[in-house]
Image (cartoon, rainbow, N blue to C red):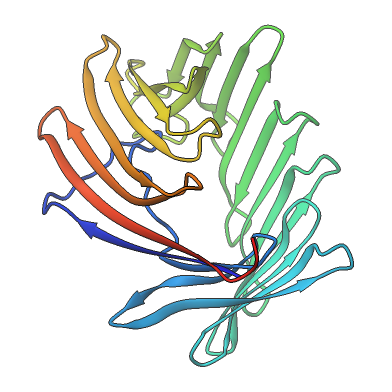
Length: 303
């Protein structure tokens, strides 16, 4: 068994608000975690007032040592918090419990290529709460999605396609009547057209990012007056497998720096970081230290 323990200290009283789009500051999600020899997480939570709060996970494996079921339990009461059924492409069912009572259940369906094509959420008595249906090609380039509510009402409908030969990507969202609500086209990663129904508020699809290579994303924020702001987010990583960022810089279309996050690490002999400091810079506030995090990795099995 291997466990990871982290402790994060806020280094400033400034309340930072990250802009929409790709992440600048990557938080620590796992404060106190344990993993089995195959890397499956068996404990997740944090230490609060000297006590562990979170969940322990019981794993069920098949003959090939693949996880088929996970049951997350309250470490104090032993009550089931969550139950997951795993399939070859991901979870096929997730159930959430409170005080032993089923709160909701999500059922997932996949196509033969491993794409999730149906997500159905039911409450504790089996009544539909929402549903998402997706049609996609075998490569995942052409996608159409419908989201429905409790009464089967259409909440969202969009189509997104990409032609790898012409490098043309198109996105269109629709009203319930079937008329176009918003549409844009990217050619070679650059915006060539955008249209949104006049006077509408911010809509799903009017803010998006494109990977243009070299760990750089071009971001767009568009409006119903058909104008769009462009910006660029560039990542530099500490290692070749891109696990840990070294810096993230967000610049406007002219190249002026708007926001940035810089990561300083102390590494052990295995190139795992044991201490991390995040310094954040913004055009309005300058540079300030945001977080300092210590991480300890303890192994209980022979290396």
